[in-house]
Image 1: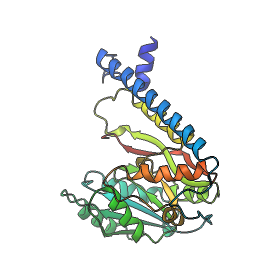
Image 2 (image 1 turned 180 degrees about the vertical axis):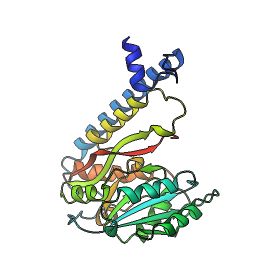
Image 3 (image 1 turned 90 degrees about the horizontal axis):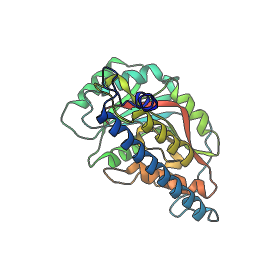
Length: 280
């Protein structure tokens, strides 16, 4: 009975609600993997704070200045073969932005061959009340794409959004308010998987969401699919994203964590969730 209850919570039931041995095995394997990762992240986080506790200067990082609430938020979306999702993501932004006159959206062309940018341009033309720019491009992976978007952004807050992720209502007001706290170096939304697209249950999904949010909230290790936001000044002071095709978010977060360990503040995970596609 306990196993069936845990499996139901974690997506280890088939479409008729029956517990299957295959799903149960996947569920317990997922639990073991997530537990191991959480312990590993926790230990490295404690070690990071211990190593940096007496070193207030992080190499390669300029002084981080406070943010005054009220500026423009630049939402930067790297777009690579996102034809299936980009329209719904842009329309979702239209309904969740709290102050449209204080938000710009940059859809950055990362290449691809499925017509993503043509769809983005069409949607932008149908929503003239939003400032949507589609004339920026880069090649070489997500790192160079995000760098190009940050360089073109006019806002003093940068929010990096994956092309298959939706944000909560009034997300722009949330990040402005939180970043105005001088101890908050950057923000990320809680991790959530959009279950509307799922055609079959995924074993351990709820457990994964739980452990990811523990990792993010207590060990300050959010990933890019949590829509990280940071002021432009702090982004530049940290050196921005590395020019790498993948794992670009991890390197920026590591610099933020070192700054936090040295006493500059912390990365705050907000209670509201960003919903990413179940295809991941």
